[in-house]
Image (cartoon, rainbow, N blue to C red):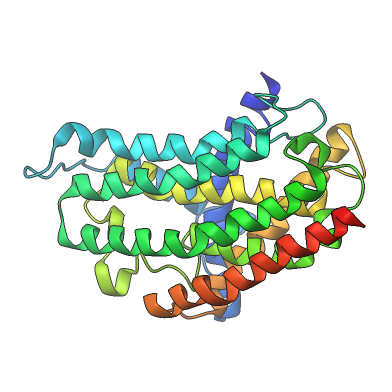
Length: 309
């Protein structure tokens, strides 16, 4: 119950969604010599600007296009949001702090990550708009480019630590054992969560918002917010698998250490918006199918040698 409500569950996830959007705006503003969010809660650095934007969207008029399947149009954003949050069921927040304990937690998380893209594709199809169709095709192409390196980077760690996520906070952190797998995970996660320079499925200068174009009000919050939910799950998974999770502490202090590690990974992915231009789709696919695939295979080799040694 504690894991479901507090960490890594609903309360922490909700705070993460608010703070991640605010931090992304602030980091980009600092790099570009701007203020970013400021006037709403100025003494707090404008952090409540995100809350104000969420309330504005939630209470704005909900328009459902007449040419869509209305039931699917309304239901699929919630389905996508729910699917993106499912990995949190198996990711521990501390010793014994997990919603569903399992010795195969890593495998379940990987399987859920891979089925999230078909949910996004179904959502884009239900909108019946040319921009959403272009976005879903880009999403499918990107998934084909990043899913194999992402799976191989986690498989490399499973060769050393096993599939029980609760054991990853013991011994050396994964980044020390296999830095190649960590690098692949960083880049593949940026592709999986549409972080720059891989914000290709929803490139606003080209295809409005891709799979999210026709959504507004609370449905847009669910549809677009699912990206940040996935980022939250991937940050926790990366902090546990590669940075040791709550180690070397335990209890509340260990949870604080875990959150700091996940926040550091999040800051890296958010900062990419300010320092990298968007790639073309062919460049991203070439990166995924060439460099990342080669490095992920090398990461598996490194872990195999480590295991044999």
